[in-house]
Amino acid sequence: MILPKILLATISYSSFTNSFTVVPKISTASISRHNNNVLFSTDEATETATDQPGTAKMDKPWGELGFEYRETKSHLKMVFRDGKWGEPELVQDPYVKIHIGATALHYGQSAFEGLKAYAHADNSVHIFRPDENAKRLQSSCDRIMMAPLPIENFLKACNQIVKDNIAYVPPYGSGGSLYLRPLLFGSGPRIGLQPSDEYTFLVITIPVGGYYNAGLVPVNAIITEDYDRAAPNGVGHVKVAGNYAADLLPSSINKNSGYQVSLYLDAKTQSYIEEFSTSNFAGINYKTKTYVTPNSSSVLPSVTNKCLMTIMEKEFGYKVEQRPIRLDELDDFDEVLAIGTAVVVTPIGSITHGDKVYTFCDPKDCEVGEITTKIYDRVREIQNGDGEDPYGWNFKVQ
Ligand code: COI
Image (cartoon, rainbow, N blue to C red; front, side, top):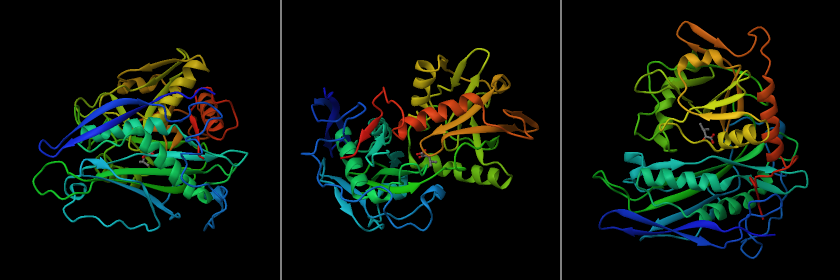
């Protein structure tokens, strides 16, 4: 097996300018990208997993989990201090002691990621595309001036925390997964507005099922008119904590009006589709055989959407268009999807905008569209290890 090289970054920090210099370099770490490969070779693995997926004691059957917080065995912690990242620690305590002056608390200097690990039929566990989350976290760090975590450290951290919590990985066939939530935030004190000189990286794990519903069930969306999610040239393209705080009020208003999902338009003109509160937007047009998704600079690049674009183009023969989508183009779509790690592929039954309702199924008997079903099945098949993974998206935990 040929093990590819991976991009790493060394970081030097200058306390004088409060800036980080990121120097990419090539490492030969044995990180795999192909079907039967492993995240780290055994000599690099710090512990051997003894438990098996699905053996933790739970308050509910594995197949009935939703997307809610549950405590697991441990979280992983790493601290950046004096210009370098320290060693990872596994901590069996869900509380974090944090400095009262931490920039995360005062100025929102904080970013996070979301990715999932799945049990395969042979009880092996695989993390889905962690390399993409590692890169996206680095871009969030760059935007809000935090110390970026080298990709290899991110991958090792994910491997280590899943291994320690392997009993909490929902068993193969349950439909669930172990959600990994990495967080990176300024933990050092500042009171003037400037970046921290200390950063903390944590990864927590939570066994989860469906976000909105279990499986493929259409949800109704509404366009948020009175609030914006992200400004042009702002921080919408990175996964910083504040983007989600800004969505809490509009989403709560919309949920109270009976809409599970909120859709945002571009802040400047209110005439282009941006993204859902939790996930990316895509529309499918049967006649032109196109999969259309916004390419706005204020939309978060979703890892799941990247997968869908690849599969639509390479396997389903669809044309993929990443471009601005005018609001009135909603009339042209036969199917609309919300796409993200947590929501996976969620079919949108309707989108309400003021008095107008765009429907993507028969409101009396809303069936999931044919392409949505096909793409959902294909992605889940790869994640569950039931079908070929020609792209090397599964990283085996070892
Ligand atoms: C994810 O999809 O992983 C997210 O972080 C979105 C969040 C709203 C649950």
